[in-house]
Image 1 (tube, rainbow, N blue to C red):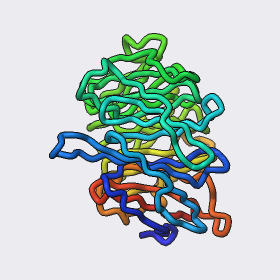
Image 2 (cartoon, helix red, strand yellow; image 1 turned 180 degrees about the horizontal axis):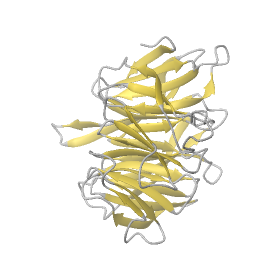
Image 3 (cartoon, rainbow, N blue to C red; image 1 turned 45 degrees about the vertical axis):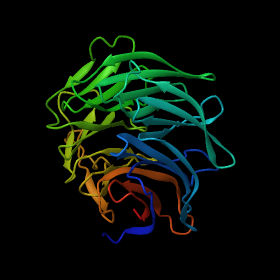
Image 4 (cartoon, rainbow, N blue to C red; image 1 turned 180 degrees about the vertical axis):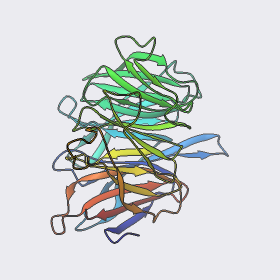
Amino acid sequence: MMDNIRKLESWDTQLYADCVEFVPFEPYLSIAICGTYQLCESEAARVGRLSLHSVDPENIDLTPIQLVDTPGILDVKWCRQKSYNQISLAVANSIGQIVLYSFDSDISIKQQHVQNIGDGGTGRLALSCDWYEGYKIAVSDSKGEVSCLNVSVEGSEPISNWKAHDYEAWVASFDRHSDQLIYSGGDDSCFRLWDLRDTTSPVLANKKAHQMGVTSIETSPVDSNILATGSYDERLLLWDKRHMKNWMSETNLGGGVWKLKWEPGSARHLLAATMHNGFHLIDCCRPSLERDANPLSFDPKIVASYREHSSLAYGCDWARLLSPSTGRRTIASCSFYDHSLHVWSWLP
């Protein structure tokens, strides 16, 4: 382990852990939610659990504040803006639903609304979800479809649903800078860009960049032209959205890239969960440019790695607070078969 990484605490989630996210609002920035997913073969059911934790780096204790039993959970996303003056959580589950929860000042979540996606038939797993501000949610599912939900005070309703991929659609994410544009990535090795005003065909389709399933797509919250894609092929690609014929940079992360998260604030670093190869922090800062250099050039470098998990690295997120005493970044990560939630810190 690198000197600038320090393990702080771990907790046994009991069920297989696959997603974790910090609340993005004061005064709850130290609160994280973890989601789990496990196939109970005796009952042929996929079960899960949500657990709320206080992750204060100065006084860490991961004993859950709240536990909520649910169907198996594939993804959790806090809305980055308050939705109708409420802190809201979207959960994608194994019975093809998006479940909306509200977060209350007593540090607990309460279920508000359940929305079936697609045709509502059995066998569909909601695999990922993403918010646009407080009023839209994009969802990808195991039938290769992408849906968009409209969120209102009353709840949510589907406004669009379309076939996006031949196999599982592992990820759907909004372009952070437009409520009409949704990226999707599938097990068919493709990633595509869709415009909600006409989803009969994609605005952009790329079948050649990745050699295996595309699992994570994240537009930079700071630079509207920068896009990151990750795949089972173990490669992180950075793109300039104005020049999508070829990627700007390619970084081999040594494991299937399941999740990418931009650093809060600066978006200089990417946090990557790489399945069999732990978690990595990648510096995506543009190099200082000489006069004749390519202005689009990037040279991302892995600056830190965390390999204390003993199983598939799936879920991860940055805390938005720096440790007041050390200036270190706090990060939560979770892994699958060892059913483990870890909190660790990094000093840039």
